[in-house]
Image (tube, rainbow, N blue to C red):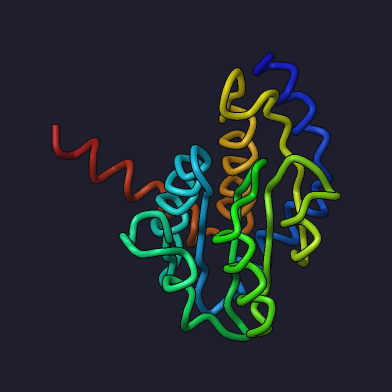
Length: 173
């Protein structure tokens, strides 16, 4: 099931992924949020982004509610939201607030017709099966990995920063 869903994600438009990578690079601040079990994907994506760029905030690691976490979001900022049904009112309120502040919004969800996709400037679809019961985060993590790879390939500085993290750990041994 994981392999089949990852293959479905492989069909994601490279233009959409490049668009997201460009938005990440050009944003003043990037907020990343994963609802429920998708918080693991948000933490994964944020960890890599922080190694490449300043001003990355993983909402899931702040210890406050999502809406409070984005209270200062504004035009020029980007909110990346990873959410699968059932989309909570807290997630929808956060997206509506970001939209009212003219921030960019990228979503990863179950469908182009999802509630969060409707609030987004760019949306990606990730196949996850029966999310939360028999579902899996492997396809979502794979999609986040594709975004990270595009960023690393697009700018030598990003690639060097990621390599530097690896070297720092290698040299500790």
